[in-house]
Image 1: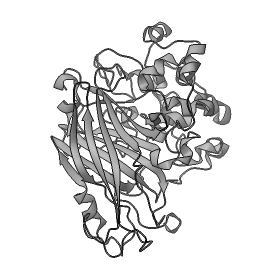
Image 2: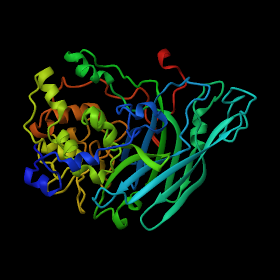
Image 3: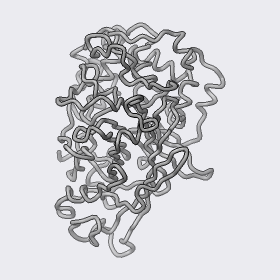
Image 4: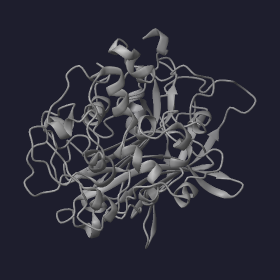
Length: 457
């Protein structure tokens, strides 16, 4: 299958073809601006503000709703006491929605946090007895949150005094963590929300950074994130509440990304941004990583230095030089659709025939931008395929992202040209095909956090 956008169309969309001084000015950033799974230098030292993954999918058990999940704090060692893990009380955590294609947030869900620390000078313990409920007096540290829904016309407080599910200390301290998780799910108008610790559900072999799995695909098959936890913010809301003018049928595509705004001497500044997975890790070069994550998506098309990394990706050239997989011709207009504009049409053996319909290209005024795009009108798949759209499963990545989507294999195949050639390369895989824990069947779907040390699993 081939996805076509010619160079003239790119220019018409605002994607320039040459580097300019003004575009580099957009990339200037203050120290501390970065994002996502430790892949940018500054954020690697600020894990509470490091946004690791975003998921967006039509809820499998409630297909008139959409589930949005965003994770923070990578590599949480389950036994990392005595303070364990918590959200930053000086930051704003956001999930943002663009529902008209202009790459600007039309809806922002924003969480802020405050601490209740009852330990004082009397104990080092996180809890001084079994914790059987979120309000148990034995729990000596808890966080509460406020959740707001922000639009251009109004700001609404959805939750004023929510309770965060605590870190999973262990079976003696929290004999039934599932109950604590259930109690942390809060109803909001038309949906639900959740804040708390979860299993790190992103499954992959991170040895990709050792010259692409050792230079000979010998370093594969190890789930690097197995056993670690993260902190999750989740929403389940009616699709019509996210759509432009509540018209999910006419324009069912939304763009989704998350950010963290950290308080500093000059007020709040964006220090983390995440939409599509692995973009900053495997697309953006080291010198631009911090700056890229300080940009709002609406500025992406103004920065040819970043756009060129999509139209002429380094990873494709590395696959050719290391493994002999010939890189597709540039500019990579197939990747432009996957990462910057949404996919307009599929007409080949890998992507199912969509006739004249768009998969997840917004029907409104389109501005190219890196974000996760979800077509909310495509119903949940009964038997999801881990390779998503490349395997004909249109409800999977890169049409949104489900917890079970194998985004590493999907992106490796896409960069190698699967969307152009119509062919998958069976050997091109990290051989980590699923999470080590099963996913739930109801919101928030992401598994419960581990309480066993990583080196004991």
